[in-house]
Length: 103
Image (cartoon, rainbow, N blue to C red; front, side, top):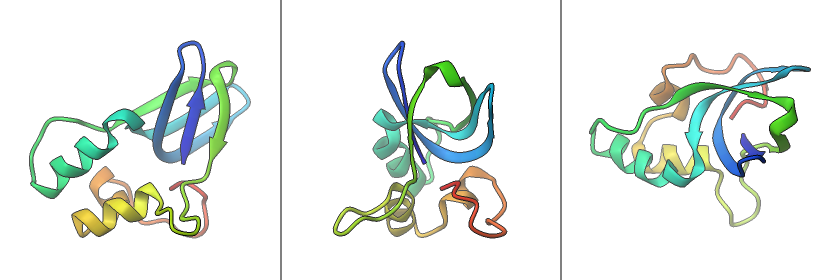
């Protein structure tokens, strides 16, 4: 998923862990460092880490599902193509048990 936030303005990519009236919990990172994280994972390097993050609903502007749309590849699929493994594996999360809308 891609989470758009305000005050300050941010875009965060990750896997949805919890959605409650108080806020949203995701495992992910700032979208600005996504490509750097993928390169790091491809080369087996350490550096940029993923975090489990809580954002109060008052900051949430929009939530988008991370999915391929026409020629635009989803972030998750791009990661898997480049790194050769599922993004959930890289995040240390179990495979989805169904359509949870998390990626």
